[in-house]
Image (cartoon, rainbow over all chains, first blue to last red; front, top):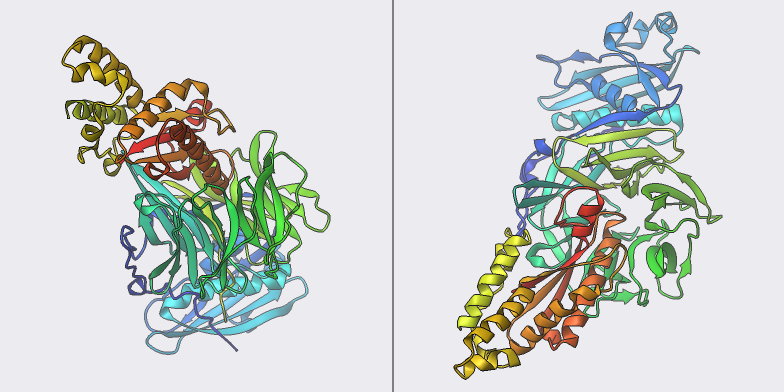
Length: 446
Length: 176
């Protein structure tokens, strides 16, 4: 038996999200204006045909949640599956004994999911599901998950993750969250919001709001905190906000720019960019417990946009010390920096894949800014993954198989994803305003 | 104080023209009388002090007002050096700051939207620092000048065309 995992950061209760900010205003229970809709722009040529039958229900009143609908949407939005419409299903089994594989073979379905939701207390439920290989006529997975009422949606994402991993060999990321920045203009007023949402764009919540720019969000590795830059008071500063409580700490407001914060893999330090009084952008690390600041670069050029290797030993960053922006790396303990990218005249905002083998950057490609990957073992450009004009801010999903990034659609900032093999693209549209700077959160903790 | 109020009016006007009317919190603050304290110095004002040549005074003030009204420096693509056509304007601001040591200015650097965001913060800061150096060469002191870069986060012009980009690659001089 698997117990339902807790949500990573306890965002389930509006009361839990409180901020005590000065200029920043906290938080609405839900932000309908920030809701995102996913469209698959480019999918696999032969997505796996799958049927997710509506779950059976044992309990009082109508079923509290349509788990099958969420599982279907997750699998379909991934671009790797072609879910069957419920109306096309010849039979609707909810128990293994009711499954007639021939029904599904004639419908050209390769995989079948059935399940039941049972009420076990006023707010307690048990969900069971089975995944079948229709062609071979055998069960691939069968699990029981317990959940309270508030976590039913998360339970559906968890089931989708398990199905996705069984069928693709890649851990699913439907239970993860993303953070991003939105900007809305009303006359001369600009409203910048930092938003956290489920990976499917649902459950969007504003965690910080300001009339001055908010930018550069970064998740802590445990998913409990977000570091970001705020320009409230006409000066940049770096804040670390705890999602559960909404409280935040200002960790850097030195002279000049305080920017580009990124948590170290152990969560104890930030890599960041400071310009200090002389206006020279260099890379530093800041120990969050001791406040000890360590300077890693000292170049008259702009050094910024640091990121950590997964082992925490190396910091990759962007520098224009050779003229145009290119990616460099330096030991997290300091020392001589070494150039990493040599292809193209503009490579910036690096992020390292979770396995440490690949680098995603903003790459100028014949005058357009696109997301490209470099192979860190050979140093060569691997692939230009996107085809926009102003694509930026790539961020790896924790399974390493997908990148989320920001792009433009008819003049508006929107989010998009691309699989790192270049086969699948999604667009994630917001109801209104510009959305940008998406960052993918970690896997939820057990 | 007459001069101060005239300059103030024009600075306010220039801010409205520059499309920055939303920044009520960044309007120049001359109420300290700093302009008055510095008044009378400078060659162009001395005829007024002697009570004669009022027509000459207005012409001179008009020129200088015109330059002090200009609060935005625009930059070429991928460049952070101050174009030479701003030399006179920045000289006027520098001299004004030299004469009014209590006046503070914030230099806000900006970039167009192309490229990555934190790098654009760096480019905006580089531009703000370039304007700061020119103002200091013209007599402003370091303590009067602060810089902040907004990169591409606060564009003056919306849109993704060359004209919008040109208007967004800028440093705004904000009297505090």
